Image (cartoon, rainbow, N blue to C red; front, side, top):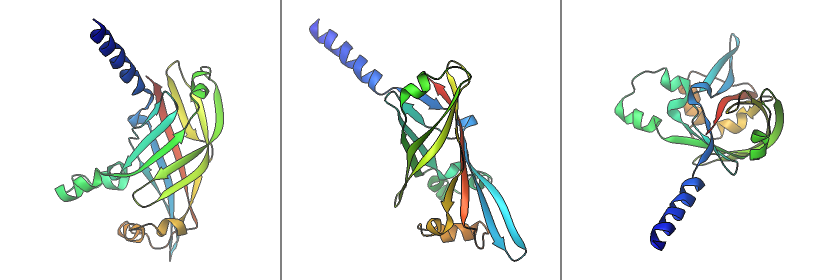
Length: 193
């Protein structure tokens, strides 16, 4: 009897500890970047997207948002990829992490909005970038929220081009020379579990 009770309590503790309190809705969550190419005939801006964001915020407020190459619109627009490239495109290219105070979400009334500046970290194989980002939270219903950047995050193109393979990838996409910054916006639907 004691063993059965112990097993039941242990199972309950482990089951609740791994629970995601909030889940991003991939169909309504994306990152957009406006990349401006300097060409001989003038500046040309292209908007690119990272679609189908699929991450979580845990009960203790740890946000984890993995990013895969296959989520980039330029990759998904290529259609069926060869097997060798398909396996590469499904690999994780970066992960976005942040600590969010859970009470900000739970105490927000339906229809209310708040803006908080949070330290957000982006980690890849050979880079880590941390920045304080103003995020706007809005509670749409009892279990639904939107999370957006309150203002664009500006990425310095000189720093970006120092990343491994950045020059090659940008050349393959047809870019010649990029302007000084790339404004990035985040827009997501969050659902309480």
